Image (cartoon, rainbow, N blue to C red; front, side, top):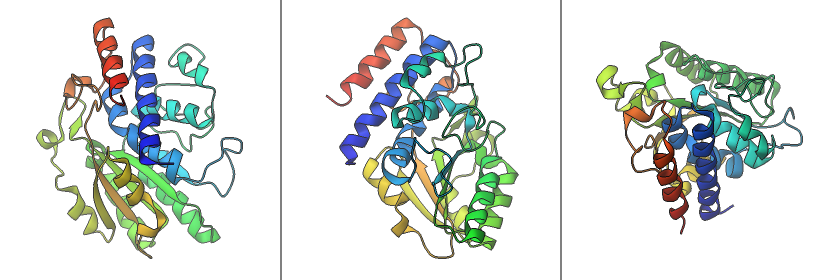
Length: 273
């Protein structure tokens, strides 16, 4: 699939996400907009997954560690065919399986429950180690937020992954520079992230997390190094694609009013014109 085709899918996902947040009256829309291009590239270009066999033992795995952006994952899974697109309208409604954080026992395509930050990467390390022990070729991807990288459990997992030489593991850091209520730089500044991870024995690459060509190239298996896990530091914008949300900490968890919803939809619709 070409970068332009991927861009169109990502734009569709953003519009459906915005609509679902508006209709549900809740959602972590800022971080959903920043992670959308990464999810699109993974599901429609990089990963080997089959919606008709979501538990295929040889499938690639994605762990969305920043689980509060579950809606972006749900919309991506719907677009890929794991769940009906019509089900997105049930987001956060009573008895819906589309909760505010992903649940692997309810939603096909979800690999593990996430929500408490700092848990996803350790789980992904375990998955990658299991594949290594079995001699399997499937790959494991995990997406964390940059604020989430303040959690010590992530750095323990980073040490373990290097020790086990998990070259089937790729960590993608959604580096949008914002976390709940503040800028990462104003709470516990991790920048620059790349040399810190590299110092633990990882291969590290920095990219524009909204450039499909760069994303797809960075996630390709031929760009990995034998014996080393890979980290992709994806520089993104919170609220990407909607002018008044972009790089605005207020939109970590906020619902647009009708005027903002219409403006956001209009901007997204014009983005590919």
